[in-house]
Amino acid sequence: MARHVLKEGLKEESIPTIPLIAGSTERPEAVPADLFFELHEIAGRDLPAGCGLRVGSSMEMDDYGVLGLSWKTCSIARDLFDRSVRYFNLLTNTYVFEVKDVEGISSIYLHREPYRTGVAWSNEATFSATVTVLQTITGLPLYPVEVSFQHAPHENLQLYEDTFQCPVLFNQPHNYIAYRTKDLNTRTAKADESINRFLRQRMDEEAEGIEISAYKLIVDVQSLIQNALPSGIPNIEQVCEHLGLSKRSLHRRLSETGHSFRSLVNQTQREISEELLKNSTNSVGEIAFRTGFSEQSAFNRAFKRWTGFSPVEFRKVH
Image (tube, rainbow, N blue to C red; front, side, top):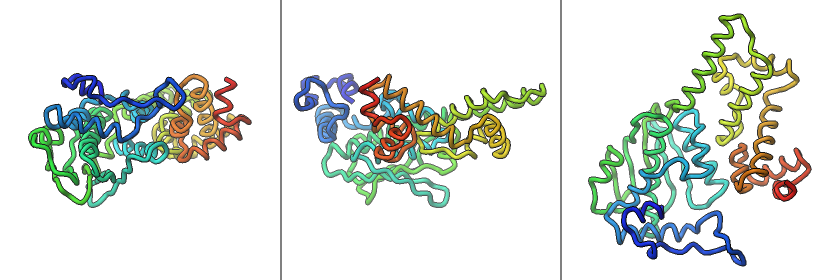
């Protein structure tokens, strides 16, 4: 956000200073929410109206760190919200999302009261970013059918229309952005590419009378598990759909190698977590999210069982 407002002409000295960690010269991994809301208020005061909407629309996937990385492997558009709910429940206390489906319309509620102006503009940024991210992961011009805000609008009403291209309501009981359910069930561009690749490989192998090697099958299954984990533990039916195999066939092929689907899930979780603890600066909470855990304590217990170390101990010795 700081990069964006500087491009719009805000003076650098107007940006709030991020406090250092007590007794350290390093910045914290997370910015206090009130500073973020304060910057929205400063931008709303000193820049043309609608800065929050423009910030959200300009965000790129990599700007969201671990969460953005998880969006890149979504299978369907709806996974974006499922992964966001898991992430925010696990790692923050500033967002509460809820998805409700009613008669073909899926409404994504943002339960964050605009108790100060900066929260209102941040809520606008969240919903404008939603439009951008959904279009990015699907490769389609998907737009909502309705957007609702609890706060009053700023004076640039045209910007709301340009951003959302649907009715936008203000001074409402809830904040939500609504899409057609069928649009949220759209396969992402990556998922379509992945499924088509796997199915082409299976068709070629069958045509040539070749049975996929056990080693390659395990690699494929683990790749699919890794992509699915930010949404939680995947079920075998999801993986079978991608592979073009029946559940019975996959069970049989894995058992021939001494593996089960569950054992590959555990193995994949362990390999990812060890790699990230060794070679990334991701927090333990972020690693828990990326490996499918809904609570950091559950991840800590599992990692201790796998390695004999807590995640923090493992990172220190490696």
